[in-house]
Amino acid sequence: MSEIADREILAAVATIEDDLLDLLTRLVEAPTTLGNEEPGQAIVEEAFRDLAGLDPADVPLDADALRAHPSAAPFDWDVTGKRNVVADWHAVGSTGRSLVLNGHVDVVGPASTKLWRTPPFKATRDGDWLYGRGAGDMKAGLAAIVAAVAGLRRLGLSPLAPVQLQSVVEEECGGNGALQCVLSSLRPDAAVIPEPYPGFIPTSQVGVLWFHVDLAGVPAHVADAQDGFNAIEAATSVTRELHVLEDELNAQAPAPFDALSHPINLNVGVISGGDWASTVAAECTVSCRLATYPGWSIEELRERVEEAVARGAPGHAVIRYSGFANEGTTISDDAPIVRALAGAWESATGEAALTGPTTATTDTRAFATAGIPAACIGPLAERIHGVDERVYLPSVVQTAQVLALLVRDWCGLA
Image (cartoon, rainbow, N blue to C red; front, side):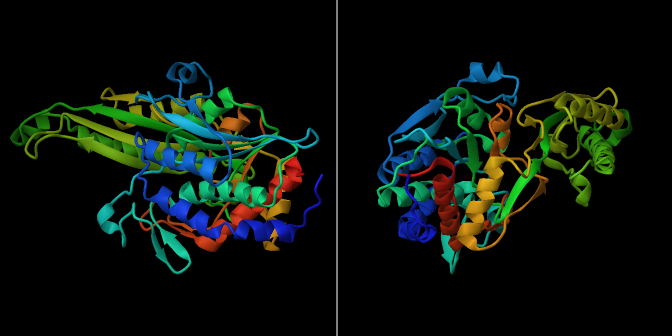
């Protein structure tokens, strides 16, 4: 087993910086929103092969297998032809612990293109910051995975236990891409996802539920509006009741979420309805996201959502579930992968990593449901899912260095 020093690994990864930036730029400029992930996967496939020196393989999404799995998120879109891209770095020994390095290639939409200072799908550098949708969440993490392996291989090193690199789809809408990898690939001793959590390992993550409320109105001429039932106005009443539920959930926060001022967030993300300004709206659909705590079932949350919607629009609403339906996850601060990841962070940065709860969710849930310990740490990013998303480029190199040290400490190197 090699006793290669921190400084050698940090220096080797630093030499990959130009390639890392080029890869990140190309990834950001691939607009990999839901249903359009393939151009990004083609870039990752090339990077796994040409930069990391590994043989990439496909893990196609299997709609039937996913729908049959109890941990899958329900989906009503076509996944035909969708693939995850993985690459195995084969072990040269048998004394280490196996590891998955996972990242997602999909991104959310730009929200409002006209509000961006630069085009959202054009990677724009301003000093040490790179702007663009997905720059932080989480194409920087994907690029760091590749750079970590490339740096270690440049030193002529190989792991003593298997390492698999994964680029997955559909993290932003339910996590079925990562789940497909769990169903189809090796059973690692741990997984690490370099989501944009600089110096922070989230050890408690919320569960998330997506739901869509279809409201049926009674159309009428505006002159006789009192004879109709306005589905758009009913959406306001439904939203009000859902915020009451949000308040109730926040008042019931268990540890460690009781340390946060507002751990449970409801988001009314999409609304559509009506067809004429002078007609009482016949239809309206409201699409929402609501969180819950680890240990609380999604079934219970659905019941409470349905009760709230019924109060807001009795007899006029039907709820559909498509997208996130994932329970929250926890991992101990003392879990071996958490300690190893925190140690790698401190070795690379000289600073201690913090642990605690987060009000978001990540693909660690796909591994956790299979009994695979999983943790996150990653680069500094700002305004993810918002306007002018950006990532701090020195932190991307730093993340790659952390991951390279983790491979040494977790898997062993020779």
